[in-house]
Image 1 (cartoon, rainbow, N blue to C red):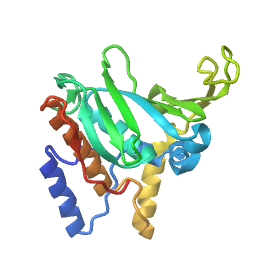
Image 2 (cartoon, helix red, strand yellow):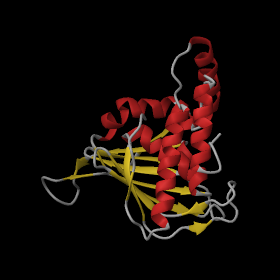
Image 3 (tube, helix red, strand yellow):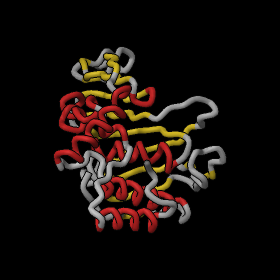
Length: 234
């Protein structure tokens, strides 16, 4: 389970210890095991909406808790994060499952130049961890914490001749396979141990997600200054 340690140094020490001992690790970023999301990451997202050009997301119950899942999901879909900026100072989340966790709005910058903007929501009001992706040929919303996909492909504009629009008022709604993601994660881990195949959520990838989180925290404590990261495998 994430986080890999109480601090980034502790997480790095854990990963080094596993490497030295040749211990295989899968970290429970369960979206990496879901069939539908793996299809999106493997080219299905581009087929559905074209080139991703704007991404908006929400998370709740803490940056290190669900925020980490959404950051890792973005890395899975869009590639490596090269820079982050916090949009305001952090607020300590008193009821978050991880002690000392925070809520903070932030944005991620990817190698492609794409930016993803995130805002926290209060789970005392409702739960949601979601992505809203605007592509060159359509829009894809991953909502209800991943249970539903809402896709709207561009059509002729209803107001202006010769223009396009995204019919957000009439999306195609699809149920996902996330209810089976954890089972598939365990099945894949068993297969990984038997055959030696590569992990789908290895420790070094999870560590990079935690490095992104620490960069967001550092930005939030330094007036929203941009922080840059070394890239890693996604």
